[in-house]
Amino acid sequence: MGRSKKEQKRTLEPLLHNTTEKGKKKVINDKGGRFNIVIFKHEGETHSIFNLYAPNSQGPAKKQFFENALTAALKLPNVVICGDVNCIMNPNLDNSKKNPNYNTSGRREWLQLAAPSHFDTCRTRHPGGTHFSRCPTNGSASTRIDQIWAPKEWAAALTHDAFIETGLSDHKAYSATFSFESKRPQGYYKFNN
Image 1 (tube, rainbow, N blue to C red):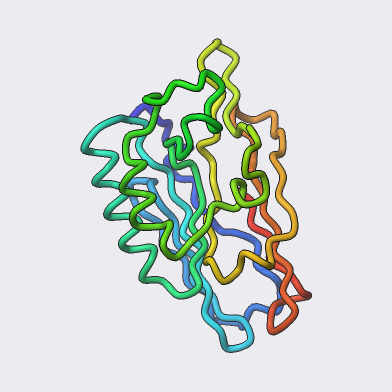
Image 2 (image 1 turned 135 degrees about the horizontal axis):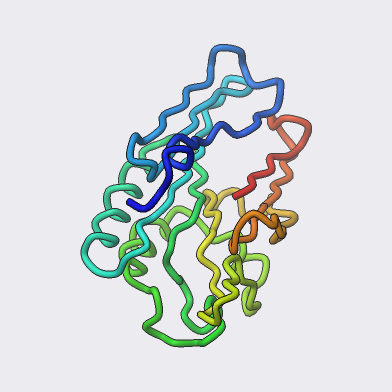
């Protein structure tokens, strides 16, 4: 829908630390371009990255997308869920116009499914901060719709996050860094969205 053939062919193949066990990585790309999954092993432990691009629509279609995507993602081991969720989780902090109804379709479904086991890395680092990942130049609201949600047991390991200008889009890249003391490559994982 409105995307060039070049854009439709883009997939997620994140750079993984070179100590990832050889032959222990699996990449699944949705043919519709809505999600990519990377499942990999490191030091005998399986990890997953579920990257999604939610529909930029309101109503039942987005709600159903979140229900389906999150149900699948949450079945994966040690999963980090990230991507352009096209949904504002906190209307007071995540959009510059502070409109409580702006782009919130699917929020309830997302929070009901993801929040019990995962945490929003940006909101954890900046509980009351207004950081925007999408800053259009046409006067519409700046929003935080690009997000990284990690397993709750990783919360203490979250050490840094950043919004990075790319110059390629009206979206900024969002990065979260986790530092672990045991069984993790060189002490940390870094996820860029």
